[in-house]
Image 1 (tube, rainbow, N blue to C red):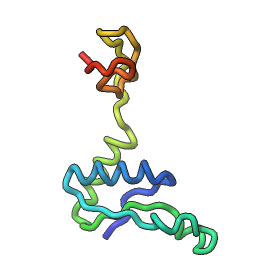
Image 2: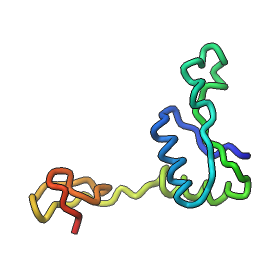
Image 3: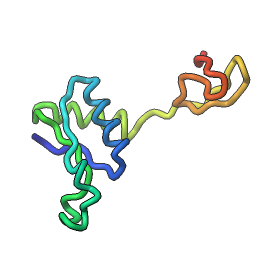
Length: 102
């Protein structure tokens, strides 16, 4: 097992875990249930960590995290052709009228 990622936000950590799972990389969250007890267990044992089950997946998982999480392409903002609302580049669907991007 190898440590692959650390974040203080459990939602972000689970998003990374799910992203790896979609690429058939198995992982688990360490310290998920002990974070509220950080003062009791010591600061070094309270960070949320993502660990890989198989060491052989480390290089591929690192590359995925770097490209999909740390350097995710935000894309250019776009204007909805249905309602003329401006949307962030990461949106595939208009936030106002739920029409798909052209």
